[in-house]
Image 1 (cartoon, rainbow, N blue to C red):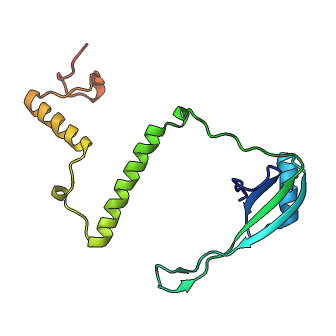
Image 2 (image 1 turned 90 degrees about the vertical axis):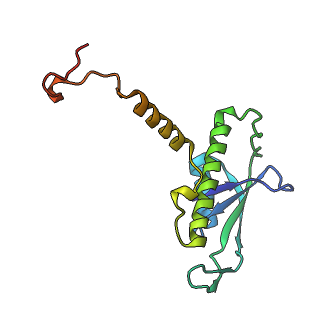
Length: 166
């Protein structure tokens, strides 16, 4: 997968940097840009950036992940990155924030289970909004009785004499 990276502070607009697979070479990137985007390229430089040494979570062994290959190309025409939009309503920021909050809550729940080695009991957990609403609805049904989905039952599925006719 070829990824177009944001330019550095000192990078001129005629240069573009891409993160590419390790098997990519200069000709591959040049041909990719020419045929996919009709963008001629003057020069291509490739760099291998070594990653930090890490420790395996499974075995505890120390290893070095594969390097990250980046390529910087010099374009014939300058490319300007689009400006950051001021109106972010089309991206539904509130729903993204809500999803992030739920993801964080799930993460805390999972880490607690991993730390303690057991799942918390229902009484130990905070009652959710959905559960509160379900309790409220159950109390109302017990008090008033008679649940209906506001649809007439098909006579073929009803017992004799118990079908309401509208």
